[in-house]
Image 1 (spheres, rainbow, N blue to C red):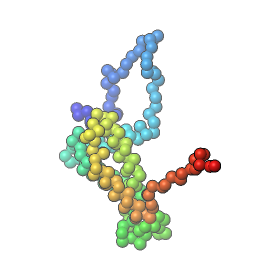
Image 2 (cartoon, rainbow, N blue to C red):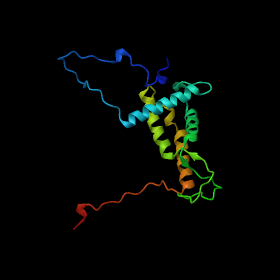
Image 3 (cartoon, one colour):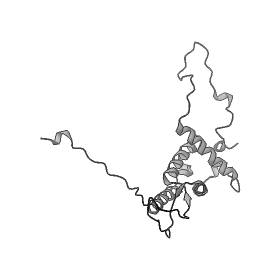
Image 4 (cartoon, helix red, strand yellow):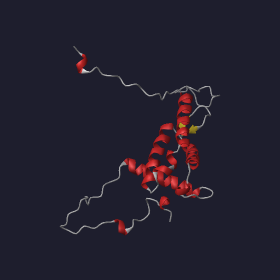
Length: 175
């Protein structure tokens, strides 16, 4: 089996467990920790991406995956989006709160896609992929995310520019 496509839901291998005899010391605690919200979401995202690759025509393994496949996946996810992104011809283009409904499409929000790619980059490496071959970190994916951010900020009238931090006067400046 391809090590990249193993699911988190597969039964654990008995050799991966270590047993500690009573009275002996162990460097790691025996208490199982509950995965964080981030870890759970990362696992769900990874499983969703692997399922997408299995349903791809022809089916793909993660080891065969490229940045182009990641871009296809992001476009596929747009159909489940909840963010209204106005077209150039829409009278509400550039308005953050339009006064009436319009037929413009719902898309995935840029922030959601950005966070998703971050989680999938981490999951790829945790599942045996090397950072050099990580399809979630390729230039095309970064450019796509930047393009989505810019398009959505213009279409919705929202600025994503970084805010400048205010400098506090230092104590030595007062004399």
